[in-house]
Amino acid sequence: MNKRQQIGFDHPVASDITPESVFRARRSFLGTAGVAALGGLLPAAQALAAQDGLAALPARLDPRDSTTEKPTPYSDVTTYNNFYEFGTSKSDPSRYAGSLRTRPWTVVVEGEVAKPRSFGIEDLLRLAPMEERIYRHRCVEAWSMVIPWIGYPLSQLLRQVQPTSKARYVEFVTLLDPAEMPGQNDAVLQWPYLEGLRMDEAMHPLALLTFGLYGKLLPNQNGAPVRMVLPWKYGFKSAKSIVRIRLVEKQPVTSWMRAVPNWYGFYSNVNPNVSPQNWSQAHERRIGQGSFGGLFTPQVPTRMFNGYGEQVAQLYKGMDLSKDF
Ligand code: MTE
Image 1 (cartoon, helix red, strand yellow):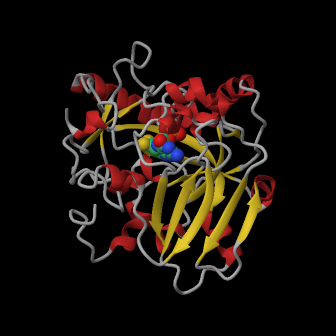
Image 2: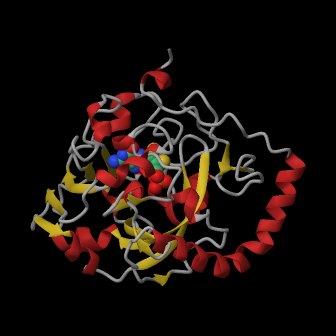
């Protein structure tokens, strides 16, 4: 049994079998249709979200930071998930995350800050204007989606607590509650789920404190009531259902680093040239865009920093990203 099987991780892709010609034809179609499709797709998906009984979360689209690529259908975004607190298969979170109670909810922001504080979720929802950001979302398992998230930059929250000069890193902690999160009864990972960022990454305007998607509050399986979204990093950096944000002096040890240290580095920036895992990061499968109900998903080349290099590359100037992966 290899390490991947030991920790119960799904194998990334058996597919990646779309013939090159088919994939190219589809891509050129999507290229021209992408922008036009957006207007039509969002209301339909919002109708679907309404069936979930989730409240609307009004937000202004931020066109500057949004891709014009076609968003992944709502049904895929909300049924093909990684949220190991509810099981390790992709369909487990949408099946079982109903047990999570997201009200009342508090997020403690503490550590190297002048004004530690605990924020009720209602305070957080009011803290700054909500923006819709359509981001590419790249998972380390070599699949990707395009998701219209809703939130505001994490920097807005961090400024409230006044980080001290010792605050060099930020640690994110997910809820620990095996009764509501039955997957925590299995030792797949060490719980609670922990993630981290360097302070300058956390303050970057693309780092989104996220409360919704597709015009509504987040479904539980996507990390309700509040999660991070970091579009230039692999998806696992974006901790879900956050209850604690700690500003610290030392680099945190994250759940995935602890579980498989030679596969998961602290930075985990999307990088097609570096594959510390035993599968390649050079390409990705776009979920929900293939024929036969998404069975044959198009494969697209992965871009450095997931295509956000213009905004984030300067954060890593002078670093060797094959060592600091
Ligand atoms: N956060 C917690 N608490 N637990 C998890 O298992 N999985 C991560 C990340 N955040 C995970 C998590 C991984 S591997 C990915 S790819 C993304 O969430 C998936 O987000 P999505 O299901 O909304 O697409």
